[in-house]
Image 1 (cartoon, rainbow, N blue to C red):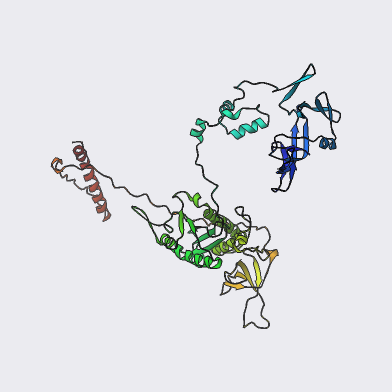
Image 2: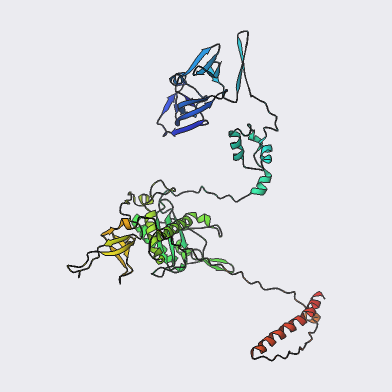
Length: 514
């Protein structure tokens, strides 16, 4: 078997679970095998020796090539005179020189020089071509190439566009720091080890289109460990505390656990109102303190610190815009689409967690067979105790979501007096929905951004003592005679005030100089 102590040169590999495979070395100990793969070894004359099923054992000091495995691949080895000649198709492709009890095979960048003198072999390694320090300086090439990144230079060396370089002198480039410095965002944050350790929350909205219920915003609560989320529609940001109390009571009662940390932005609805002396803790902050919940706020102007909630809102709105655009339903049903989107996100895999959020939250695997397309036309059976013998058994509806406290579907019908209905049994008309839409709708569901006006700063003048202030002479300016109506009087008064102000300015400047 072939054995390597490095993954360099592996073209394909398969990682093995810990403890699955091991080999016994000369000392009698077991060395674990971390991976198995194919390794391409380029020999001195350019021949690429392909080694199959090479064992990656990082604890070994040497790389070993099995002669018997080479023979199985029709690659022959001829031993003699303290060397081994490797042949493929009757052509010499490699040379291995004996050193102690092993034969050392030369790679592509090293040539073995063998000299025989009095039956004693003298072996030395030398590079094909020696280069001076300037030619091998990566710092010099870094400057020549316009201060590109080190990774790009390494790619040039790997592609043999540049000769091998010495990267020991390329640690820090002051010019790169001055010209390319950027903020570093810490992406590896500590994850929770269980549910309710951290709850992420954020408000999304208001939106330009209100729902049929009068809502224009919503608030989300997302568990950090499972990524399971809740959503509540709101009309005012002051409803944050009421919705959190509802969420807290429900989840703590269902799981018999307590919320430990709540992470949000530094907005007034979470922390408190703004005053000239800073933010004053509000009802939400005081409620967290009374219940022993640690509050974590993002720094003002740094929404990435509350990234879980921010990304959840963005994902929800991206899904909602796509769902509404694909359907023919009015945009005012976007809140129904958001509730359907959070229902789906809780049951599909996330790259942040190893299982689906629903499985981590409830301990059961989700079922997705019942999910129809949002806005799907359907024929639903409506309960009607006064239904006649010849009346239709179904009513035409459109699917808009799932009931929160019952098992069934929610439907919308604009032609009926009761536009919304919850029903258990329905037949969805798939052939009428799964098709390419001929008309693409533009959905405007962007948050309204409220920008605070720049505060007006009162201009301060130097105080002048009363005894040094020269008397102000009153200048009477004759009003021009204008033969116009009532509006001319207004213009005349404005002109008089302007002329009086201009006449006083030179005197005021003189007093300031004195």
